[in-house]
Length: 244
Image (cartoon, rainbow, N blue to C red; front, side):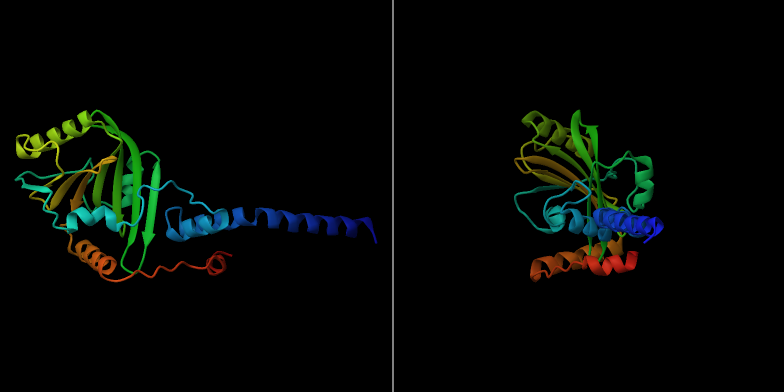
């Protein structure tokens, strides 16, 4: 056996070892390239091969918890109407997420969900608002911006009262409640939900002026609240076939 054959055999063995060792990284790289870094398929493959998500999550639990305050008729929540238009940050509702990401810094958290009803993408950014350090979170359904949120973790009583005061004085002209959760409905189909959970303070801005988005969210709400959910995930082997 010549040295050339031995070297070729050794090189082949080394190549096989390298492929085995780096196979997960190779699959992850191509899944990110092929499906996109903000796709559920890429995240699922990353989780299966590394046992962790490539991103820190913006929300805990199901997305249904994020819209429950707008769907349930909780009598303990004080409700107001305003003749003013309500806006969240500098982006109009229904703006597509690539445009928002182009004007923002890198997201500190990302949550993704996809089913037969919609493709949901959530991006969160560290920010400063109301003289506090917060997360500013954008929710996109089928690429369209429909809800924004300011999230304060472990807020002080002073911060909670100050934010309640600022919101109510801006949209109602005066402070009426500072210790209760409340909702303010604007004339432009945007609703603010001020919610103090005891652990976090959440101020959500929900837009319901698009019939398609509203229909999909209503269907999702009905599905999640009336029947058990059967969750399915794609087998990583099937997804690899689409990549390789």
